Length: 293
Image (cartoon, rainbow, N blue to C red; front, side, top):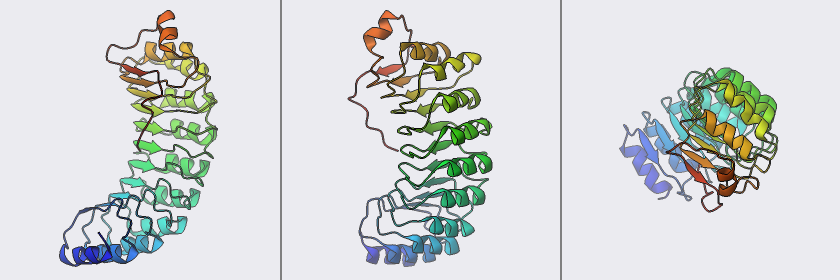
C-alpha cells in the first residue's frame, strides 16, 4: 500500500474507525494526513514500523481526530517530544499508546501525554526508548491513576527511584509491568512492587542483574497475590531460595521463566523441595525467550 491508496481511503470512508497499516513502510505523512482529515471518527490507528511518519502527522491528528483511543507508533523513529506534545493538545482520550523504539522521545513527551490523558490512559509502551528516564515514570505514576499496563523494557535510564514511586502511587490499578533489561532496577524497588501492586498479574524482570532473593522475601507479608506470570530469565543473583518464596506465596502462578539463571535448575529446585503450583509451567532453558511487546 502507498500514499495513493491511503488518499483514496481517506476521501471515501468518512466513518472509518480503525486502520491498521503496520509494516507499510512506503506510506508517509502525506497519505495518512488525508486519512486524518477525512476520517474524523477514527479511534484506532496502528502505524507500527511506519518509519516515514513524523510529527507532521501528529499535528493533523490533533486537529482532526479527537476521538483517537489507540495509537501505535512503535518504530516511528521520526516522532519527537514536540510531536507528542502537539498530539495530546487535541487527542485527550487516548487509552493505549505505543511509542516503543521512538528514540527521539523522552521525558518531556511522555509527561505531556501523562498530563493530557490522565483520565483515559490504560496502556503505555516505551520499549527501548533510550531517552526515557525517571521523569517519565514519575509523571505517569502521578497523573495516570488508571494505568494497567506499562512496558519500560530496555529503558536503561530508569532507576529504583521512579519504580518505587510508581508502585506506591499505583492504587492497585497496575496489572502488567514489563521492565526487563533495566540494569538500574534492584531489590529496593522490586520489593515495593511486590508490596504495593496488589493486583499485578504479569511481571518481567529478565536480565535485571541487581535483583536478588531479598526482593522476594516481602511476598510473605501478604497472602492475596494475583501474580500469574513472572519472567526472570537471566537474573543471575536469584537462587532457589527466592523461587521458593515466590511459589509459596503466589498460588495463582501459571508461568515462570528462569532460563539462564545460573543458580536455578530443575534439579536444584527438586532437591530443595520447591513445590510449584499444579498448573504452573516452568522454563529452565533458553529456548523460548522470544517475547513480543
